[in-house]
Image (cartoon, rainbow, N blue to C red):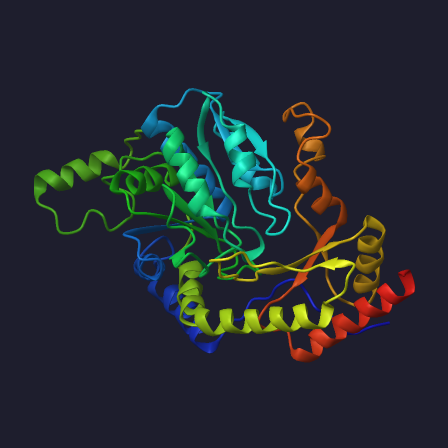
Length: 394
């Protein structure tokens, strides 16, 4: 029985992180305060955006961003939103939560991201938005997708939950659309345990987002220190606004403790990203095999390598590898299925032969970790298991 365990992700907590969390506990201020303001400011600065707002999760960020746009642009229920046919279920769910209609489009067979040609073909006169996903750490083709959005008058919410700090043609992911949404859940690139962020340059977008995150409350009072330094007239308006609700919102707030962890994560991000890319390069070198399609980095892209996705020549090879790796203590995950999910029976409507690229990847693909805590020996161990298995299955 193996004692080795190589997961798909980890979280590193340093002495400085613990000190920041302790500072929060000693302050008595657990709701959004100075730590969150600092974390948001640093995240916005990293992306050269004016605004960042922290919330409870990446899913929450996507849902609130879409709701903010729906309310601002007065979309009717049933408006269509284009999403890739391979992504985490949250990308589809947030469309449904907003009483909009998800319309699937196929993926590029090499990058595994939303295919611009398929997205363009999915646009109708009912389409209001698209949600490109930067999957596994690789930016989608935002140049082409934003051209489609501009031509057809669509709003764009970038699902960047799996990709932080990577650029497409010199520009950070999360900065192309109306909103860029990120996750800081356990094992993600920036990890706070739970949490998410939304980026935007638009003042009205961020105001709506922050209000919706806080039950739809009047934006005059969203944090407990919004009543500081005011004259009597302004103070009275804030007091009134504490229970004045301008939208039907959610309670999707995060805490100072999660923000405290996020600050340290950003301080170490560059070094951690460099190590992810080293691990991925070694995996690509050691796992090279004609039966395996390894990650392909598109021209003009950087890859953050949140995961290392592999598409096998056949489903049988995929299944043999997954079993062998799991028994050897290497955690695997099949790629992210939307097609065939029981929860979408009767909800998503498409032909049985639609989305061939997504179907092929889902039938034959899986991923393993490529995180900074993996050692070169871990990579070599994984490679030994893979090649032993491929040899037996030839």
